[in-house]
Image 1 (cartoon, one colour):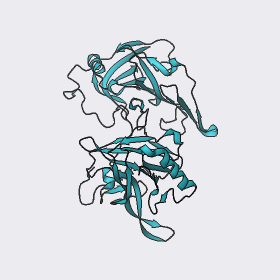
Image 2: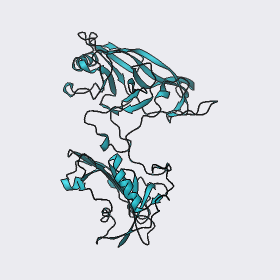
Image 3: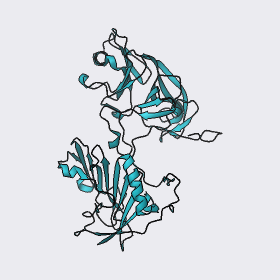
Image 4: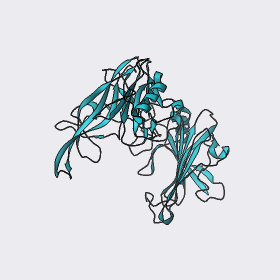
Amino acid sequence: MVVEVGYAQAWDLEARAPWRPISPGEAQERDAAGLPYVVVYRTEGRQAPLEVRLVSWQDHYVGLRVYDAQGRRTHDLDMRLLDDPARLLRRYSVGWYHTGPDMAESDKECPKITVDLLPDGRGRRKEERRGALGGSYVTTPSLSDDERWMDRPAFGEWPLLSAQAQGLTEPPAFRTAGGADPGDSESDSDGHGEAPATCWRPPRPAQPGPINELFRPGVRVTDGYHPEMTVVEPRRVGTLRVPSGLLAVSGPDIDHGDGPHITLPVPPGEYVLEEAQVRHRYHCEWEGAQVTRTDTTAVRLRVSETPAASWEMALRPGDDLRLFIDDQISGFDTDGATGCFADAGAWGSLLALYEKGLIQGDPDAAETISDSMYMLRTRDRASGAELVAFATTADGTYPVWVGRCAAGEVVGVVVLVEGMPALLPQKGTEADA
């Protein structure tokens, strides 16, 4: 079989077509510079490509999308370039197993297998079956080193990685497709250009969203269930003392020896605790009338009065952004729908006081906070350090968003107690996103 190899700056996921085709020479230049580009493998007589390889060395990433003859995506493979420049980790893969020619790619009944691998040997395999044998089955994959890693081929020497999935029994012969001449791709001077929103981009971790607006009275938002909610003045709920200069943000329902999930250096001091709140009206079935309700969307420890110029997700020890798949989060874990802000310097004693106050009901160990998402306060008498626990809306992992001023200093730390609401246009003004 002859396979035609073409290059482009990007791959339009919606149109399933290359965006701005480029010559092999330009693709090799982008490869050497670490810039994103794609490689498209096609065969005569078939409209859909065999596979599309998505490359961005500056993001430590190579991806693969495999299509069947009907144009349905059947496999995704996410590979990562880590510390060894000669090897790629098969980081994450998804396979869809269509049960017939009429089953659409997006059919919810399509069986699926997901494999999630880490470089230290850990991994997770999830098989989702449908129909009478439906359900999810999670196991630990038993894979050899060669199955977890692959050698990194030189530019132009990549094999057709989907050959087995495509049913090929003989190695294909490759032929280079006619590409655009240098300068014909209409890119701007740095070679990036502005790709449509439908084009593939390298995966990135979860992004913060419009956090500042949650603390700006008058902003209109929606949580998807309530069509319109209005941000009101943030509610101040006391302060937190952090004399050690190391802030902990964690689930307090963890083993003492594990330490807090996330720590952040801040100037030693006492900081304001706030709740971001929204007000909305809805029809209450119990009262048979429209009622007004105020809900908390986020909790904040305000380090400074300076507004945040940017927000970033705090990372746990050992987190490696090179391994994050698209929209992946890091944060603190909780099995009790609870998080806390605390002084990490007195973490052990504060956690012991928290447990005495919460579990044993000892009034000398903890102070109860009423009518707030903040629940309980403990204080280490020796150092003056404090812990304040707050409620979340469920168990799970909650990202911790760190606001920084233009100079890069921490000005606030925010935890969304549920998902990020979406902004609505301001009444009488243009939307300010």
